[in-house]
Length: 349
Image (cartoon, rainbow, N blue to C red; front, side, top):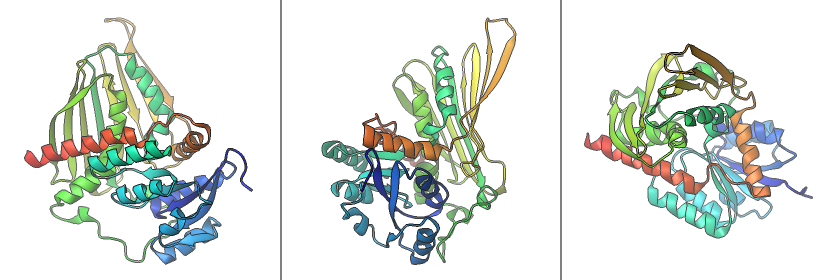
């Protein structure tokens, strides 16, 4: 019998992020979220995952999970565009936690948000950076600065094998070729991987720092479509930029940070690779009490609790307690639209 305040959940897509993050944390949260089923199209991966995480109910087709009335919610961690699968889950009456991106098209994002709200269901997008306490502290300090701030987001993403090698992961027998090895990545790779899969993190974090309306003023694909550089201005006079690059072949050198600079303080937020568990994000705040006063600096660490686990806890609170969702489908529409705007600008550049 199900305990009050708990939900039953199935995981659709048992790849790397599910095995390293979602499945272990679901087992740790067994008192609040009962993991009852797993689904993956690869039978060998499915067998290994079901044994490792002690899940009896398995399926190679998501239909089996979506039609099961004993399952309250699903985690969707499949690659690519999630629009069709999320819409099927909502139609089946399931709450959804979906890995970013929610989908590739703005009209699909709006449709998902409308249908979820109409059905009284939660569709929450996996915006894990929001659940690092360092991000909340960074936003507080950034908000203290008057208008006219410089806001930057920088991500340099090398081959992260050495960040992942210590994790035990069951993989498909024939993984897809890495398109970053091509001499000239396609526009499809730029749209799907660089913008939707990677830059989405920077976009939702930047959006949380803006205090007024904002508009994209420039965007270019860089490094042969392995990266992007974009600029925004806000209605209250802030200027913001995003620079992201996939540096294939470089082992190490991971960088993901944000800066808010104003007339009396500079504040930075540095994220480690998500694969380095128990390594907190850090906030550094440098400030002066007066125009010619001495500079002071302090550093604060975020929580050692894994953001992916805190994300699952928040999802459970939203579903069982009616908590306000920090990253629902309606909110994610802004990021799907931002990617569309950036992509259009880059193709025209």
